Image 1 (cartoon, one colour):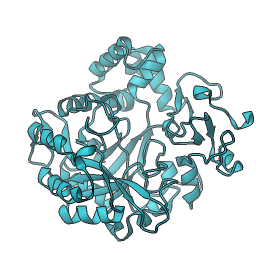
Image 2 (tube, helix red, strand yellow; image 1 turned 90 degrees about the vertical axis):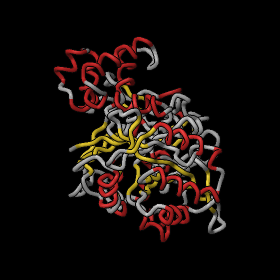
Image 3 (spheres, helix red, strand yellow; image 1 turned 180 degrees about the horizontal axis):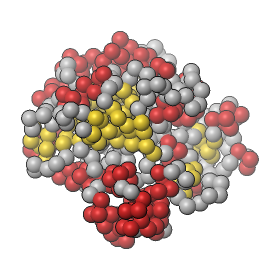
Image 4 (cartoon, one colour; image 1 turned 60 degrees about the vertical axis):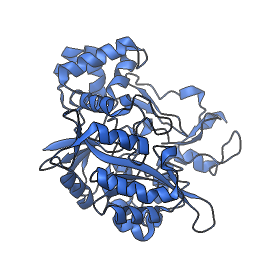
Amino acid sequence: MDYIADLHTHSRYAAACSDKLTIENIAKAADEKGINVIGTGDFTHPKWMQELKLSLKEDEEGTYRANDGKVRFVLSSEVCTISNPDGKGAKKVHTCILAPGIADAESISKSLSKHGNLASDGRPVLMISAEELANEIKDASPESILFPAHIWTPWFGALGAMSGFNTIEDAYGSAARHISGYETGLSSDPPMNWRVSKLDNYSMLSNSDAHSLPKLGREATIFNLKELSYKYLSESIKSNKNIRMTVEFYPEEGKYHYDGHRNCKVSLSPEQSKKYNGICPVCRRRLTIGVMHRVDDLADRPEGYTPKASQSYLHVVPLIEIISSVIGKGQATAQAMGIYSSIIKKFGNEMNALINASSEDLKAADREVGNAIERVREQRIKVTPGYDGVFGIVELFKDASPQKPNGQKTINEF
């Protein structure tokens, strides 16, 4: 049976995250999204762990529920490691952790507390290497799962342009054997990752990395499992099997897809960036090298390469974003939320509307929104690529060349 999973989320105790991220609210929002199993996020934070112990009840499958709801939780967290092993500068890596239960999560936290203040942030900073992190976690919890978060992002992705690493084995050293998969992040998709053959043996995962309730499920992984349990979920990730498909952002919409400088409003494709040798043509400082450029640097396969055993994927645009674009009003406005609620009521949840509902039923519910969803499914949209922390812009009904967001300059304007 298929189960939709979002295994990388956050709580209100993580920096720059909404204070509405409570267990009760997460469970409700995940149900509306159509998510079957969701990560708790931030289990290393002491106050969040207290709330998890009070709010969640373990079921027979090794997952947890809130108030006997339908949505299952697994214990998850993200940590940042910083080390300088060769004296050539700090190496920073974000790693996601899945734990088989609260006892294991507490054991992991106890071990990691020696390396940083876990109460300072839901995504704590630890002064150890990624290799040391992986070894310590596996010592504390042998059945835990580890994977690099948003693997390509410039500063904190294991393979990002600023990481100093070119492979997972470089980043995690001897502990790479403990790494079961990797997270694509919003700025890359499966075809981009397939170009790098050294990633073939790792499970490709997509998750939301949500910092607020509306962002839950914006990316997800669909597992085909005998039953929904921590055992079958972890076995699937470890073996790189039974992952049926991923639900993906259009990677251009991610905020690190292109190279650029947000302060200078400069956005450049890899080819354009290379003409400037990675230097901003406005301020003459180094550009932030984006995901597309970094993938191209490490690729040993051509664009369009598809492995024989590749999993399926589907690009989506979040429903509230589609509605906002259609009506020309903000995503949090009463009109947008009213249309969102009516579509959720009609189709049960957002994933059903975006993925499973027929075009006829969608248009019967709301013709303009149905037309927009159909265009997204058929990839008949324009996305102006994001860069240097600026999200890309989706144009659902414009067939003209992509517009420049926020006054950014093209290469021809310098």
